[in-house]
Structures are given as C-alpha cells and as structure tokens.
Image (cartoon, rainbow, N blue to C red):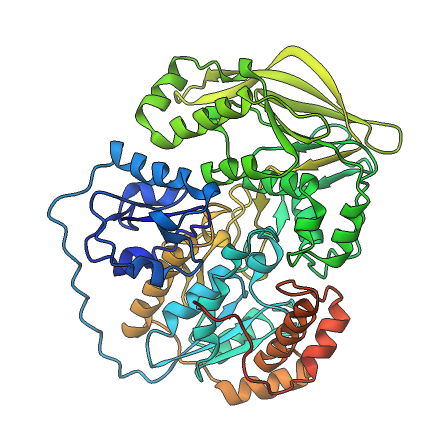
Length: 559
C-alpha cells in the first residue's frame, strides 16, 4: 500500500519535511516546485508510514486503498510524475543551520494582513521564542481568501486554517481585526512600535479586459462574484442577474472553474456547505443552464490545474462539453504531451470529456479554446459577447502566443464574468511597481525594517501553500537583519501600542472577538447540518466581535 496526494493539496510542503524516505516531490528546493499544481508521492518508494498524512494541513493524503471512486485517478497522477522526474539518488536530510546568538531582546513584528500569506509569516516568526507578533486586518474576520475565496464545496482546502491556530494561541501573538493601516494607524506608527513590518496584503483588484462594453450592466469581475457567494462583507449586497440561460466566463483558470461549478451544481449540495445564504437563495432561483469558458489558447496551455479539471467530471447533472476539433495538437503540443505528464493528463482528460455523450436535461459547462472576447454588446446591459477565434504563433522570444483571426462569432449571454487574474494595489508609503503590480523587493526586503510576502511580493501566483515557502524566505531575511543589528529599536512596545489602538480603534475585534464570531457561525451551522452559516453584515460581525466574550476556542478537531 502507498499513500496518495489528492485534489486538495495545498503545496505547503509540510509533508515533505516529515517524509523519512524523501518520496514526495517536487520539494521546495527543486525548480519544479514553483510551478507545480500539486505534490506527488512515489508509490515505489513510499514505505506506508503515514507521517505525511498526519502532517497534511488539508487532509489531502490518503492510503491508496482508502480512495473514494472520484479520487482513484490521483494514484495515476502521482505515479506519472516520476516517469519524467525520477527519484533522486543519495538524498539525506539537511542539517539545521546553527542558531544565531539572541542577545538583542524581543523582536517585535507587525504583520499587515490576516490571509494565508500573513498566517504563514506569523508561523515562521513565532518559531523563535524572542518574537512578538501583532497582526492587523481591515476585515472583522481573519484568513483572507481562505474564507472569502476558496469555493464553499472545497471544505478540505479551508481546513488549512486549523494549522494557523497554533500561532493564534501563543501569548506572543495579538490579533487586531477591523483595523486598517492607513486609516487607524499609519505606516510610520507601525515602525515606531515594531522593529519590522511585514505586508501580506495580497492582490485585491482584478484585471480588466480593455474591450468595448466591459462596463455594461451584467458584466462583472469573477473576483466579485466569488466574494459575493463566499459572504465577504464588502460584497454581500451585490446582485447578479441569473435570469438568463447562459453565462460566459472569460478565462479558464481555477477561479473560472470554481465559478462555473457554483453556477451549475445541484443547489441542494451547495446547501450543505458554508456558502453565503444570500447566494444560496439566488442560486435556487437561477435560470442559468449553460456556462461557457473562453480561453485564448488551447488545452495544452490551459490555466486550470488537472485536479480541478478532473473534479468537474463528478458533478451530478452537469455535462462537460468540449469540441474535439480543439484537441488536435500541433507539433509543439505533441512535444509538450510527450515530455510533461501534467500536460498529457490535461489533454487526456479533455479528450475523455469530448467523447462523452451529453444527457438531456443536464446543465452544461462548455470549454471554448482558441477564442478571445472582442466586445460585449447590449442595450443598457450585456446581451452577448463577440469573440474572435485565435491561432498560436511564436513571438520574438520563441514563446507561443495567441493571435486573433478574422473568424468571429457571437455568443448570446446575460451574464459575463471576467476571470483573468488578480492585481495588487499600491500600499501607502511603500514603493510600487505598477507594471507588475507588486511592491518591489529583493527576497522579501523592501527597505530597512519593511518586508513583503505573498501576492504583493511575487504577484498572484501559486496556491495557498505556495505562501509558506514565500514566507520562509521573507522571515529568514528579517531574522538575518535583526540578528545583524540592522533593524531600528522601536520607541514603543506592546503596551504603548495598546494605548494608541484604544484611542484610535477602541471597538476593534480582537482574538476573543473573532472566537465569538467563529463560535456563533459554527453553532448556527450545526442547526442546519452545515459547517457554518457566515455572518455577512460587517456591522453585525463587528458588534458580535466587540462583545469579546471570553470563550474557549471552538473549532473542528483533526482526526
């Protein structure tokens, strides 16, 4: 028997660190790690010790004899990786670096943000006993895109938050929610009270198409739709017209697949998740029967991951529709299939979907490759999309890019969602690279005492666990600066910061406030057999959090 990594793999490499035989790859020090969709266990080397399963924060690792029918394909995916990436020889664990002398007192660090990048940074910081961490977030709830971005039917992925609770329980950690840097505290004031500030603010804007009609009613960013159905308080009052039978999503990455799945899946299945109640009610009355995903390039270059693409095939009452003519590969595509198992699997899955016979009465998710939107049209609101077919050509650097042709057509649709990526926004008092939409940095260092991690550091790339390695790099730079005496001793301490916050934001939500919110949502969920029922009104969240009822932590227990 061997263990198998499945769909919810978060790529944080906790499993790599505990594997006694080095059978999990790619590892963080291998070139493939940065672009890997997921990690893989070599079935020939695995010794069935189960250490990886115990360490996995999202419960994605299972014995091969415990796989559900929908998961059995992952045994093949794991094994296929080693066809082109054979196990290395002569591996041995790295010896830990000698600890630096710690005679500089307590290191105080402010972490701005409370999403996974921020939480991984706090974890790394609190590995040392001479550190105090103050975490700030403008929302009344923590966990960022884990709470407001991960699809509600992916509860396993959300369980990564349980691994962050270790940091939250530390005496050296303090949480300040509903507290906005730039409004309640300035960047300069953070530096006055801390040796260093780590910004982990993500990429909160969306990219635009830049085509006529993009601002018509009925045209939205997919990021807004995702935030709406996940109960983000800033988006809870949005409305989306679901009265038409067809929706078009521009883009075919994992977010686009999430949105297509939510629009087409059985509402009774959604009713067992933590989807926001207002979204659940709207989807109960939705007329959407078909969702079309537009991708500029072909299945070889598609932006979605194989695990997400594979999972679509298990949707009840939903057909996945692909035109076989889109699956004819050119020479470059054939080479990619021959040399990359992930690409080969992607094309194989697409061919399997294309060979299926659609069932009468089913909803449909239609993948349209080699298409690009040129205009959204309609009188007052979106009525359709004019698209141009594309062809792949080599640019001056030898890369394949999509070029539009004169072959155009129109797709009628009452809802259009653009899903072409997130974009970082400037951070007050920090430099900003507008072209890359990141804060310029070197290994996480911005300037003396100022650091970045996560998407604002590297751009919107990777999955949740990618932020762990990113945080390790940033925190290592911070520790090196502190131990070398390069950081300025702050004038204020935790007490003086508390005094300042009491003046500026006396009703902020602290850790006990978040625990009260968490307990209330979980209690409401238990009544209806759901993980939680999210409170989506900011005022209600803040009011509940302000009560600061001192409760024991209530959370799910790892099996």
